[in-house]
Image 1 (cartoon, rainbow, N blue to C red):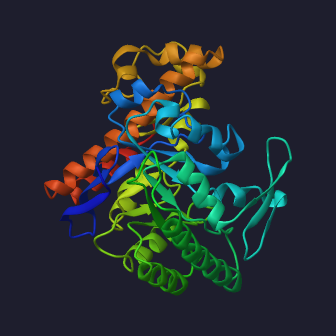
Image 2 (cartoon, one colour):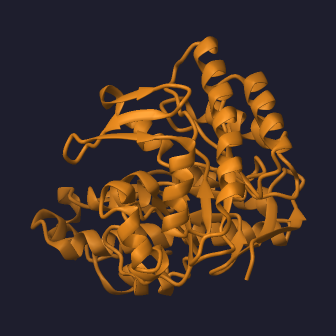
Image 3 (cartoon, rainbow, N blue to C red):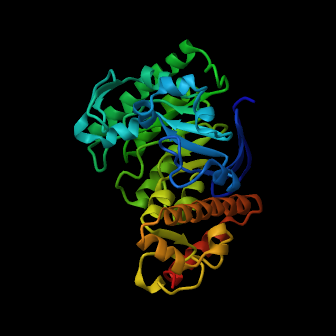
Length: 379
């Protein structure tokens, strides 16, 4: 099975209903990808992810390169076999993780020299190396190496990073063509990444240059780095407008559940975010009325489910009181159940969005979701 994407319907708002085919299955879009940084979605077994109908998850090149190492994973038959996952995998190139190292990295036109956050060892990540590692991982979708920058930043800094990102994309494309197909996943493809900070004209120029390289798909990077959500949405919309209509569009590292529809209406087909899993481990559960902090004293004797409108296994079986107890007792099961609920909530929200696009009800759905949030926090 090879990579293929088709747009089935476009909403007047710009939202797209589509179908993404990868070597490991077909995913209905717009889709949310759970984050499995080190080859695992924290707190979830692969079986549990399958039961939630997760079709595509994200793993990270930087972390897997450092531990256990891409050579070992290649010897094990690739990341799918190594982690016993039959669905699709997208690997981030590691650009954002290197960006987050701050004092431990040095960026040049050649690549990024950095020190491992694990043991301080020195490494040099080039565009060619990012492709080599992802080839070894044998993900279905890989990403080119990009330079992610901070917010706020000057126009000159954003322009230089966008130019470097485009140059690196050219080198990545050449490395892909020279290296041939991945042995364990010959259908693997690589997406380009658009940068340009919060400057619409730089984003347009970068998107147009990357579009000329004819990547199978495109990501919008450099968002959710501290800017207001409205600005993030505006940049996503402006960038998507200059990307090919027949290719999937992926906004990286967003968003809160109430913001999912905002990005979908920008014409985006794929999203990922650590919030559902990270917040779950910190006792923050998402509900239709907003976040619920399960450790709070008001839930100690609360026999109700987390969200009475939720159909997930956790809400059908467990009470707020029990989840509060688990969190306060630092029991592993608490993180597991919280993560299951939060992922279900995100995936269910995305299912509702797809259904609304299909039947022309997206404006009504967005109004209803906003009204619930305005009505107040969970009791």
